[in-house]
Amino acid sequence: MADAEARRQLEKELARFNCRVHQPDDPPLFTREPRSPARSLLWRWSDLKPLLDRIGEMIAIGSGGMRRTLRLADPGLPYGTTPTFWGSIQVILPGEVAQAHRHMANALRFVMQGHGCSTTVDGECYEMNEGDLVLTPSGTWHDHVHRGSAPMIWLDVLDISLVRSLHATFFDPYTQAEQPVAGIRDESFRQYGSGLMSPPGLPRPARNPLLAYPRAMSMAALEQAAGLEPDPFDDVILEYRNPADGGSTMPTLGQQLQMLRPGFRGRARRHTGSKLYYVVRGEGASVVEGVRHDWSAGDFLTIAPWAWHEHLNRSAERDAILFQVNDLPALRALGYYREEALSAGGGFQMIEHPQGRAAPGGPALS
Ligand code: GTQ
Ligand code: FE2
Picture 1 (tube, rainbow, N blue to C red):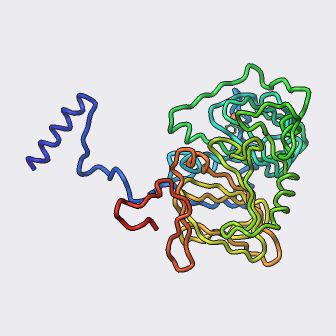
Picture 2: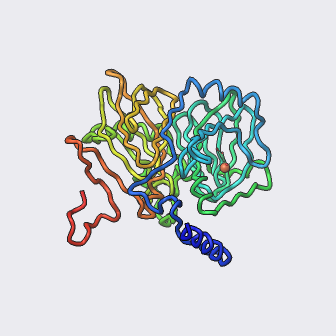
Picture 3: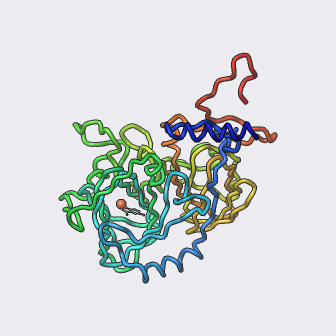
């Protein structure tokens, strides 16, 4: 006890100098592998739909640049959908304007239902239609104006938790509700949208020049990819890319579109970083850490860091299509991405390991 008393005394003295030592009852500094309080959760469209109708009626669209959104909130976390990003469903009614602003957080939208709303990003105006992906990268001014005749909803994903954890939050309202719109609509898509050809003389862009990935393009690409060897985890899967360098659309957030063909059952894997899936169509299931989540069109599913997961199509006739957002570009940029697959024999197979060296004189890493 005298020892414990001496330690407490030391702790007090150290605190005067803003220092401390590890105490026996402190949680361990390191765990052998990630132990995330984040949960892997399923949100069902049948639950979300009435909630969206209610917030559409009850909640006024915010002034000062705030949005009307239903946030997918993991109760295991202080805030957000995963440790790095927030997924929310935004509801915008005919005639409404979601006022112009900009923020440090990178953001994207994937249109779930409706049409007739346009988003202006740094002066470039984009029509948003079902299945379109529109980016508002860090620092870009953006506003949404709904001139259509029916409510519109889309998935918003922002890397808010990451920006917050780095204490790098910035936000500016614009001086007016809407930004002036440039004369050429969809300009970045007209320049770079084919992914194959662009006007000569354009400088090599420093960041992704493309702000929109429309559904017609992504679905055609997915059909093409169906002729490739199937991916053992994901069947037919494509990454949305920066056409200028082949990298991710934004520095922190990756997006993928995949098709699970009838009867497909994928291999299991786990990795650092987190993912959010939106079921575009079809019926399937994901087994996450031994828990089976049956999903169908309109549902959302998260995969927590380092959680084992595998996907299957429950239908023998219909394709299932999933849109995915992940934080893997952020993990990879930092050298923190690690991935393992489950082998047929039950062992683990390392897929990606940034510290992938064997200990000196020791056995090779498995
Ligand atoms: O549409 O600009 O879900 O700024 C959260 C913050 C959407 C947006 C969100 C935002 C937006
Ligand atoms: Fe925003």
